[in-house]
Length: 474
Image 1 (cartoon, rainbow, N blue to C red):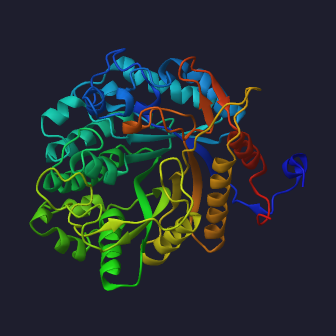
Image 2 (cartoon, rainbow, N blue to C red):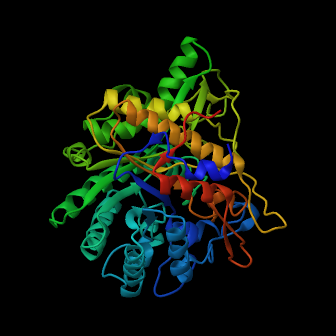
Image 3 (tube, rainbow, N blue to C red):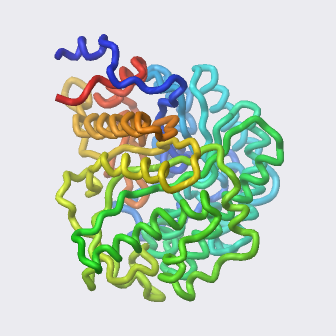
């Protein structure tokens, strides 16, 4: 079948009317302008300046200059036919010290961005926190401090009050697992601390921040939808041995069930609390009722599958040590991560779209029914621009297509899946990896800031236009 025939035929796998077709970004990774218009410092601004923290010592001071180029970027979204755009707000751009009055210039940027999106018939989806905690709040204790959750709720209320008349879809905290365990246990992400017990307090307080924010936003009586956002993994034991099965239970418990059970069932898994022992002393009366307030939707970020072993001495064998762990897997000593034999991305992440369907069916089977949205899904590959100025990325295209097929199969099976957001709209600053890993549908020349849609972007645009996919891959 020719490309032209593919583009003109009616899709065999049609997605439901109203399905949200989008792409996602985060503020720190794209905006730049870190010291403009009153923005305060974030923990990432501090972290990137510490030697050895980021590949090649790179930073996001300029990133891809979205702060100044947002109109150009929104026009590109419109050209690609995006119906929705998920972006995050930089908390220190709104409240430079994490509390107090609104920085008017910072708020005005997001107001203009929302208006620009709406003028192009693109639905704005706002994420309130994507890891850029104001540095002043970190100095006051960071996420291990309960007060940070209350400061977040105040910030959430300010943003919801300002934009809730035009933005219908909101999510609170993006990937609390990463913010807690990569930030406070392994130290791979800002603020770079290695304190496992404090990481558990951070995880709980990030969930509490979600609950307090939901309460504060709903009190305003606006017609908005509010959800939480978790990063989930399919987990497989390497073998059927008792040790490997227990390793899978532990990692599934800390990665998936810790957050899902709190948000959707109002409790933490008993086996996870038992694994944590004294480190589990972080819950106060009433916390879980706040955290588990009914959601309008649950946002899911999915990238890969973990295959784990219970063989001692593995990658996470020191995860319960009190200091210098180098691992985010608190309470999961004697767990190692092994190669499952699948193809991998440039990040070394195993490609397994079946894991997404497994997770979606599990959510539908084991948890209270709630609308679901794939809020991030994508892959980094070593893209190269050709002499004719195009960027061919067949691996990314195949990755997205496979996961969209999985989404369609889940919908056909009765899963209430309402949208898909590709990660990421554009190449950008990839946290501790700097600029070396490219996830974008759109190629960015970091020297000139020129944007060029990749082959995957053009394919995705056609898929959106047709509202679905062709039949099974040949």
